[in-house]
Length: 272
Image 1 (cartoon, one colour):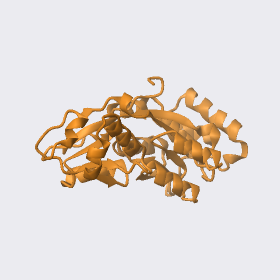
Image 2 (tube, rainbow, N blue to C red):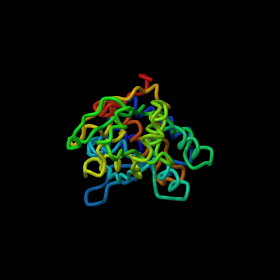
Image 3 (cartoon, one colour):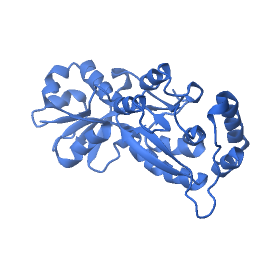
Image 4 (cartoon, helix red, strand yellow):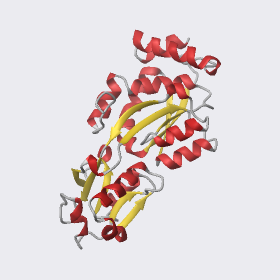
């Protein structure tokens, strides 16, 4: 039955072999292999916890996966740190897509995710964004000192990897102390964008993957100015259907998923 499900996902020998490998590695963890729902019954379902930088890419990708696989996906977006804490405390997530490796590895050390499913799936970038209604269009971080820029939105560095990267870039530019009083902190990188969209901030440091929003202009920030945003994923150990998480990871890292991720500015495994 598991093989029939994987055929419904992609119909490829490569994917069948991946799932067979997971069955061998996880042994009894794959209790109740997935199958296409019988007519009149609810499709198999699972929950993805994902960092907010994936909002645009996953909202495009998930409907394609649902249609191909005959499953129902619940997507929960948030900051990586907050999502990791919820998983540690028993939140009903099946698979966790983080905005860096650290939080996944911390959960792995605590036995909360399945080691054999851990994988890199992307590397993120940050950009300097200006609200199109703000007036000056910024092209360099040092311009954030401009008095016309009163508020600068970033994700909270305490629990959001993109916020931490923003802080590191500001420190690298030598303007952290000057800009810190202007900062407004989003709970996650998507909320930082929302601050700009609503007029609550004239500028911000955002993930490239969400900077295509029509309300902002942006320029890239040199990646040498901050730590790498190597993004990792793993299936949650307590998931009742780990094979669904494995199938979605394979979809993200497969041809269709990679094409979508590329459109949103991510570097992909093999490129970093």
